[in-house]
Image (cartoon, rainbow, N blue to C red):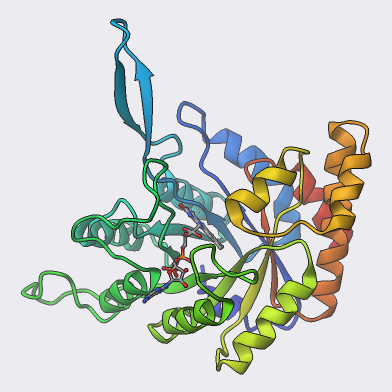
Length: 317
Ligand code: FAD
């Protein structure tokens, strides 16, 4: 188990991917059966997303509504440990500001350290559905940058309780998110890149981008980041479009454009299988061009089902 920083120094473009914990009630075998077919492409690391609580309203027998807090996809850290154990590759848990106090975060990181997990993605998280804007927990981190700083403090042996004697140092390598089409709350791409740079200066060692469907957006973003003085690796994140519904859902939820040519191909497709194939082929073309441009890693968002990612990897690697 290495640091991702080392994997990023290799000359060849590597293949990696992100998975979601299964819905609560499902077995971890649902994860393994999706990962197994991808292992022949030798990913140096596998990301596992984190899902915070959601607030849902349930009707009670008396007809009144009851507000319930549910976490539909727990298990991020346990899955990471299981992945490292089974496949001997780095697993990268995502860690959020939202829903955590700084003490929760510290304890979460200690769990990871004890399990031999040395890479994390530090993210702010989105606003919960009942809120318009992201609100941190009382005593929680506000921005991903603050979270990166907390992780770096632990790497220096600085815990929240400064009186701890002989504090052990952790050795986390931290990734952060970047947005070629800017984060939806950022007033401009320039200001978003300004804050991305701060996250890296705080100690993060690489960037993974939000999905994009037009490579030019990625190339322009990388140029702007380099011009702004960002020197760390910027890993492109790719998601193959897989359903017709995503034509509306993806721009709305992730604030990214779907190019007209791709929209037209999807609209022309006769059935769900044809749509999925269009998404696969588009993603293969994107991947080939990015690989040619020499990106360090092609990182795929698998959304829990890996058959399309397998087809793409087979066409590219
Ligand atoms: P930040 O870097 O904190 O930025 C948030 C906003 O604040 C931006 O507009 C930024 O420009 C601005 N900003 C940043 N720092 C400052 C500052 N110091 N002062 C003022 N403004 C500032 N979500 C999940 O819930 N679980 C996941 O597992 C997950 N994985 C992801 C993986 C990737 C690769 C990506 C791209 C996103 C992921 N997300 C995940 C979504 C992410 O949590 C949201 O996009 C969230 O809204 C922003 O997170 P961030 O870490 O980029 O935030």
